[in-house]
Length: 143
Image (cartoon, rainbow, N blue to C red; front, side):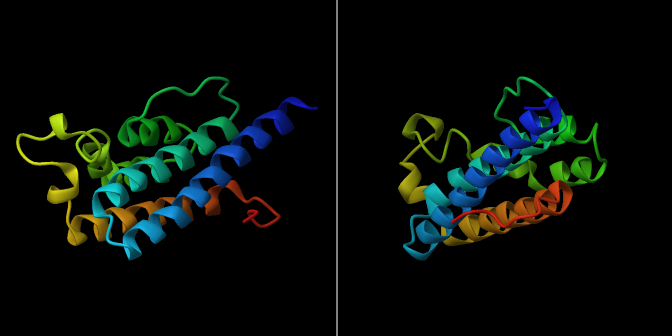
């Protein structure tokens, strides 16, 4: 396997999982699991951005911040810098949307509402579209 195809294959794996997570996130939204939509939207963006970084032959991609990952991907295409500015709010869902001790009071299921979830889902979908356009994968993503 060539070096390029090795990185392309890894990028495809991360992007396919991001797309699968987006499908699940829509199901969660339709079932009013808004706190999970917020967290999963962050995960969709994180995995999609990691696909971009792997695609550009980075061997080890660590970290969870979509802002930092967007900045890293921005080394390859500046459109990701602007994307990072738009989606950085998703970083605020990484811990508080999952853990009660990430909030001053209550639990995530009580705090995260439809408006927050819709906004997060829209940002995840925007990220997927921008990354899909960048990667130019020829065949469709398997579902």
